[in-house]
Image 1: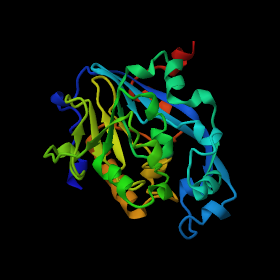
Image 2: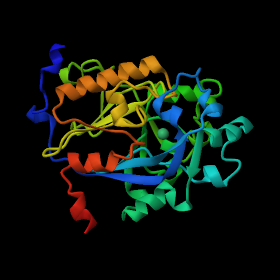
Image 3: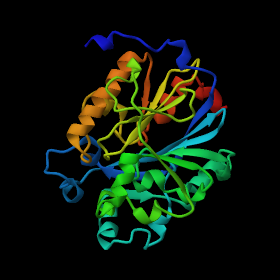
Image 4: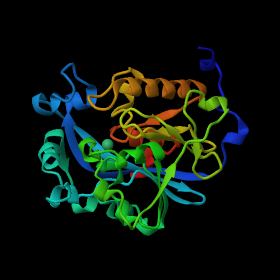
Length: 305
Ligand SMILES: [Zn+2]
């Protein structure tokens, strides 16, 4: 593939001094079936009932300190999902949830408390990019009513389809009056860096935070490319994969659309070939914090002292 040879990472207009920090925020812990993460030979979703091995996964989102204001990539989970019996309205959803995820959440895992622990007020969040509309990625939106919530137009369409809750998109916790949703239609680009992607969206207008459609986990899932001078570029991929190593090996999880996931994996790997040092970071990957620290040259051993 000839564009694999092409290295566009040094193009000077594409990076600048716009992003001061990227922080990985922990918003609780969970467990999932091994088949959920690594895929399964069983017919679709049989693992929900037949799976016997649970594996831990962290619930994470990301805080980006941009010159124009604070940006979240995803807004965490609302701990009310385990403490309030009516959080999920449909009985079938309440029945299935503990069979798909074991959630270990405290009140302090809500996004406003998670941010406070970082010394940040929830009211100071200017923008939240929502990778997709699953409850563990947009559960904190009620705590940031002032923020622009960016979601792909394709993802938002799911809300008007029958029974989005069957795909764990809980309309009553998403389309709420206090929130400021902005639906993103990706714009076409002739930038060779983004070849293969169905458009881009520049969040701040300076190239530092570029949204890219990476469907498969859900139809409207997106990723965000962060570029800052002196750092390796970072691609936050949400739930495109549960572990970056699985994406590298074309191992699709036991959920989502397999073919669409593989197509998105290929696009992301092609981007990595073109963008030297690209660090791919998945939301539920235990390696996320170390990967971000490496990419931003932060010394974690010093941080602990
Ligand atoms: Zn998730």
